[in-house]
Image (tube, helix red, strand yellow):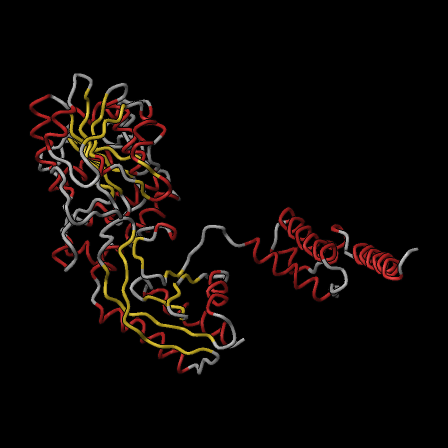
Length: 482
């Protein structure tokens, strides 16, 4: 005998299915929806994009109906148009766009690492919108080399005999090892076989280069005799790697570059050092921990040094290779070099940044990364107080605002154990969770990225630029005035 519950289930299910069918049939047709959209959207949004956003909006409503037809509320004409307008606004935004960095991480890999100076940005704009002498020698009227545009500058600044620039430091490391040690052995301390951001592992790079990795020493201690014992007729390279954001403390020992150079000269092999985030200024002059400069490493007599053009240098993404001319000349001739070469925009901005270093005090002020790393806490506090004062004048409610001391980070794998004293604005929204607020800030037209600590949303003003202050004030004021 069929139960009453069974009968009711089928009746209810039929009713739901019928309602679902009616709701789906009531959805607007794409062509009809486009035809009904006012001139406002037709004038602002290209036809191809307009068709895409209309389809997306209708499909989203279709999925809601299929998921839960009982609780679905149909959209009227005005709500449909509002949905199309919102989708159009999203579709017209660039995927890569400006973000306010409130994290306090100066060289933030996920947010584009180093900011360019005003001069570098202007040079990039001028060269980007104009023809340039990228590979044209203006004096001879013949074809020139793009590398010559910055090679002399790099050599003057670092003391190296020759230089080459490729598209990033990982590419620089790969190119050098592939050129100098392919089908031969490269010796590396076991404690330097690190992995950095993006799963970039030294052993993997060496394998891709065709070189045979020879590990020496223990994880925490490596001696010069470890390298000496590993030397064979197949040895081509002694490689020293900066361990980036990895540090070992306690019972440790590493072999200096000077020791490796002396050993290499005795056995006629090449020495290479990958600095990772290389710097041209001694940052200890400004109260930061001591990191060897590129010039100091070159002075050891090492054959090749590689480092990033962004990060501590403060320029665009690039991999810079400096060292002895005979080694650099071999690297330049490698066919792989063409696949890794930089374009005119990188060259334009890199040259501008490099020229700043001829005047170190000016470089500290002009290059944003250096300025942020060395900026006095009092100036950071004033920037934060300016925003707080404006929010109070606007009588922004629904949120508590507190000015707090905090700690910033260098980022980019540089000086990982050192915190920079800073000031932050701590927000505690009244009508939304701090996680919900953080999500909303990431999804505004001008995204704000901060960090959450102890149920507060923190905006660290070490990385908030002077040009961000007005926009940040308006963003917070508008959000809490809704």
